[in-house]
Length: 293
Image (cartoon, rainbow, N blue to C red; front, side):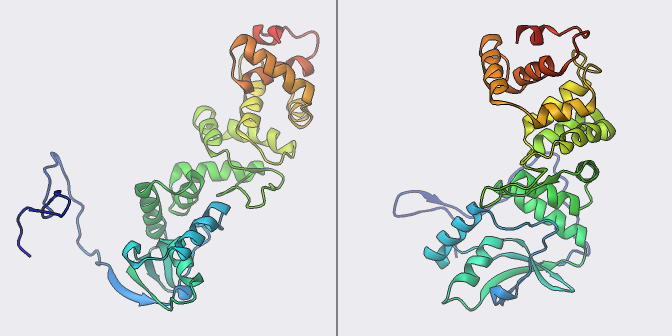
């Protein structure tokens, strides 16, 4: 095929792929790195490592249905799979593989197979595919980062485990959360970054003791504020904070909504003030925001 510019029927230019100038570029070394190979396999023979790829969400099921019902080989992207001692493990393209397995007329599909003998390298590859594609949930990427041995992700995992809170990859398909289930990765990560692992564990243990279903970001923020913020710290013991979180009343929520509107506060900050006022001992002075509540 000649390497020169051409025009499509629409008049758009077509040109060959060409290198771009990237100042300061330091290409990765390829010594000892095996190239991927193409192969074909029955989709039902592919494996999924659940340590960093979790169960299917409702959104996943809808996506798989749409792929099956609109199957078009022109749109097909071969799943990337790792060759391991257990078989071919999907790194990228789980939905495509499941859709192919669900289609009655598809017996096998092309795959792009890479060396997957190193577990952590497989998990890092999953993170890379997920981040580059910008479609995986933050929690799914986090699970993969834990599997890849990422230090920050592992610290968060340890804090959550010791506090007794379970971070889900996807919301439950039936909408029913278990006790101490959470999707609030951002709030947990911020807590660990700001307070350190030990303090973060203290906060999350208080939240876990409330046995909430689910634990949301506001629960974490409120517990942190009541336990550690200068305006509140020391006024309410850990057990009382747990009770405050567990027994939030409709009246308190309504009151917090009014405070948030009047004082232009976030909902969780207003609720923190309302709960503080309800549970602090009379001898303790109240911060201005609590007085306003």
